[in-house]
Length: 406
Image (cartoon, rainbow, N blue to C red; front, side, top):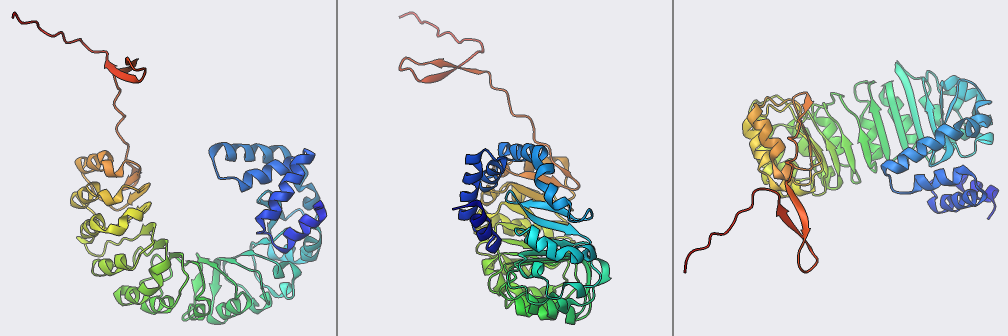
């Protein structure tokens, strides 16, 4: 298949990894460095992989991006899986050049409008119509004409950063992008009731809405979501009633952040509602004894064996809670343990870092990472045993057997 045909297939479906692999082989056979770059993007991540990608970009980016840089100096084009697939810039400049980009950069499917004030020029945009990912930055202001987004039949990811939203705005977004699987709304403002149209996105797989004080009704709304894999709603003030209403939606959640929304009374029910969670962030300082009680529950929770990250935030944890975590075999798979609000003695910190169950975890207490003691130096040296297998002999003083007179 020709390069032109392969690129056309990728323009129609940027997630077609099989076609992308064929294109990578085509480029590699020609000696085109883009082939190696795409192959590295498709390979499992590693330190060597990352270093080689950086070297390729440093050597070739100027040439690869030159045809796109001529479109407009204020626009920044970027790479997605080794091909030019992203563009960012002021919304008004992008709007002026959107048809040129749609023609000359046929693989671009990730857009960042930064900042945006009025979406009217984007009505009927061919560039938006093919977008898979869209970021809109509003500078903490209201953005006009959300209804101009029109149908976005391919959009999977939407990030709204520093945007003020009303209920009508959110309703327009939901209507325009029925295929969304990931939604991030951060650092902005939601007018009263603006979250309610989100009920139309009950198929979302990822929702990230930190620090919006929405109350128990938000928990009731999210309780009807059925496909969530990641949920981050720290600081939502759900209260116990709102969190209990949310519990049915947590059956599929693998990453959960409900810091500031959990009281000690709800923790047992919360843990029971998390059959597949791997990353868990909870924490509040509302009850002084809450943190130690949570540590005891987590230490005995069978589901803790799945956890790779545990963040207990400012939960008022003392040495009692630290000892419970250090003695928990269920936490052996942790790679990160964060106790940001803990007030621990040096003895408790030592118990944490010396725990065999937490040996694989980076441990943070207070505002710093706890240093682990240096590994002991072995004085043993390998020697060969009579059967050829290595054995160990110490280099210390030899002990000589005493002979006794017979």
